[in-house]
Length: 109
Picture 1 (cartoon, helix red, strand yellow):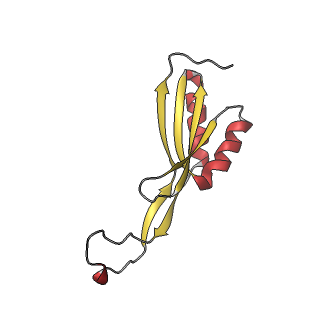
Picture 2: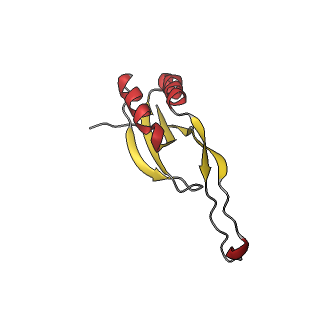
Picture 3: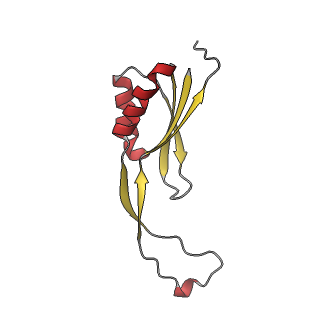
């Protein structure tokens, strides 16, 4: 058995959830927040058989796309904010960060 932990951008969450349900994969969704942009994300916990790993990874890959986004940088802490000019910076967001772990035992009641 495997446990897949997939952290995805909120914009991709519903598409991924629907695709998993369509293929009969059950998942638990948890609200989470990214550390870099402080933006909303969703963490999926998906318990699967070993042989289903590639199918789930393919679903995640097909439904969680990275995209470019303009963000305003945060003003420097402790610095002189008078000379700080906050120009938007383009960063890549989205996609998915996926962790795959072996599960010794799984019980469902």
